[in-house]
Amino acid sequence: DAGVIQSPRHEVTEMGQEVTLRCKPISGHDYLFWYRQTMMRGLELLIYFNNNVPIDDSGMPEDRFSAKMPNASFSTLKIQPSEPRDSAVYFCASSRTVSRRTGELFFGEGSRLTVL
Amino acid sequence: GEDVEQSLFLSVREGDSSVINCTYTDSSSTYLYWYKQEPGAGLQLLTYIFSNMDMKQDQRLTVLLNKKDKHLSLRIADTQTGDSAIYFCAERPPGGSYIPTFGRGTSLIVHP
Image (cartoon, rainbow over all chains, first blue to last red; front, top):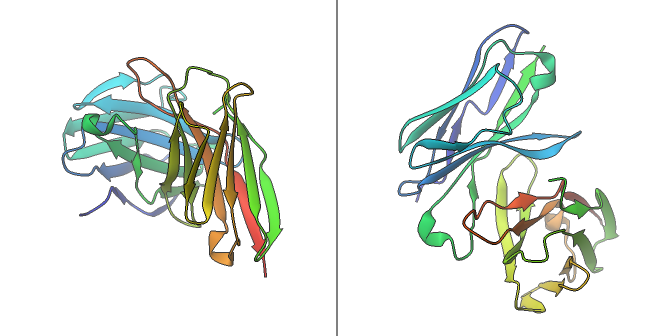
């Protein structure tokens, strides 16, 4: 089975540019999470969706960040305009309600963003 | 991850045992997890323990849970260079939300 697929794996952009990160969750999973990983802050939950609906976006740093999930197989995280402090690895993860017994999250390989 | 505490680094010699420690704050947490992140990859569930257990063993891995002290540990026997990774402790709170809270991760460095 295919795992969580993220693109791009690496992105280098200049300050002020728009960045769009993409995620395809595992088929059948009804939860989708966006995390950000930095040396300073560790792993931060930005937002999560259940059945394509945003449930908690309290971790989104500011209005420059937005996330959408137009259907069960696709989500985007957009940063506009980007700033150097947004440089991080962004992870998408998915899970399904029936695995609530263990609550395992399945992570993608991440998108490493560098804003110059 | 501010509610789950881990030391940031651990260095061990190949063949020795590694012990990674974690403290959590919610004594009602139902599940506690260890995730492993290899270089350049995402996190992957390594093992988990249910809150009514004290210990869980899986090959070279031993998880110990001390609910009274809210302390979780992961012991890796006969540590290999391939075990070098970041290990994240996470807790799952009780109630409707099953979203785990992650610690900042412990970087395990294994010397030959």
